Length: 147
Image (cartoon, rainbow, N blue to C red; front, top):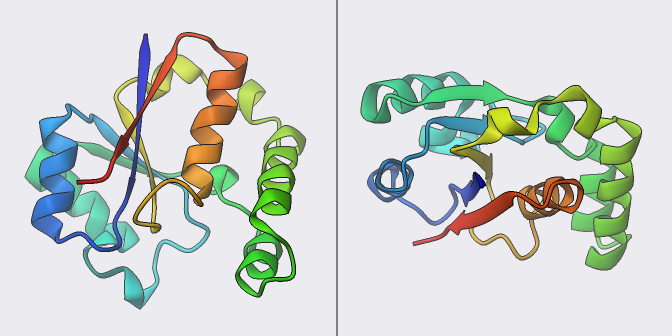
């Protein structure tokens, strides 16, 4: 089985965040955010996160912009122009248009953790991405790291 983890950094201290990753054997953080340099990200700001991941957990870090929603799609949802259900459909269609499954080796995501900002996965694209990958490969186990 290919284990793919997901995590959001919001509502977590750095200690909680990195302990969750380490305690679950995560080998690499895959950043799925559009903007990984926002000042609001705190310890999860792009270059800082790469440094902390290596120093604290001996983990790799990669920002995969192809995994992020578009700014327009995210804005439409946040501004309540579209429902969550519509967002889900549009995001999955975006993954199809970007040919994500053809661009990556899913096996390379084993023990990787998809990162976004949302605290829980229910209304976050990292869950949708993980489920999308699982829909094309039945040998994927998704583990959401929350607490």
